[in-house]
Image 1 (tube, rainbow, N blue to C red):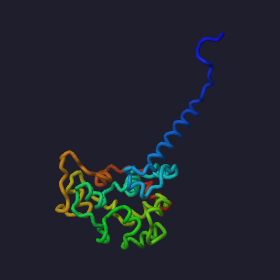
Image 2 (tube, helix red, strand yellow):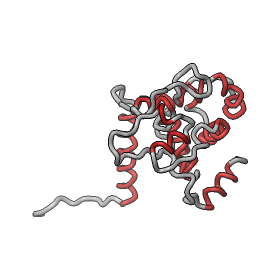
Image 3 (tube, rainbow, N blue to C red):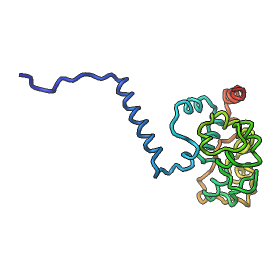
Image 4 (tube, rainbow, N blue to C red):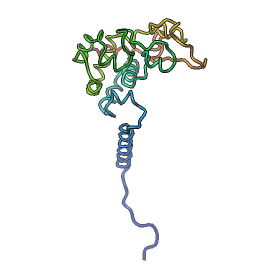
Length: 207
């Protein structure tokens, strides 16, 4: 008569990892499509986790990754986001002067950017759902054409940051905490850009 644990069949580590990853992906999708999710801006322009997009972003340099992620999530240095954070008194788009400066308005509807949008995204005006089907490369090229999130001479101080954004210092509130420094895209004026980043950007323009 057998006494002890029941016999069991072993499972490979590869299969266990696959099951864990599948479970995590499913949980991610459930949270992403949850109507109570707080990621409103990101869900407006991103359909969900896509492996090809992840792979493409990993092929970018740091500057490109920050710009694209900032545009798609809405967490960037555009005036509307800074206004919500209490760091700017002016949320209006600097290009058109009529609507709030947001990622959606820039990517979809700003009239002064219509020609650039047509050249890089294939249409003069778009809906947010259309952005979900665009390549990250096209989005990068549009932002590079506008220069909104790239032509910034950032320093480590708040005053220098917003002067680089094209806003006068009178338009900006000083942060309440002296330890808080907003540097959304890194310090481009310092010699922190690696040579491989520059090579990636040059080669990416032709892709």
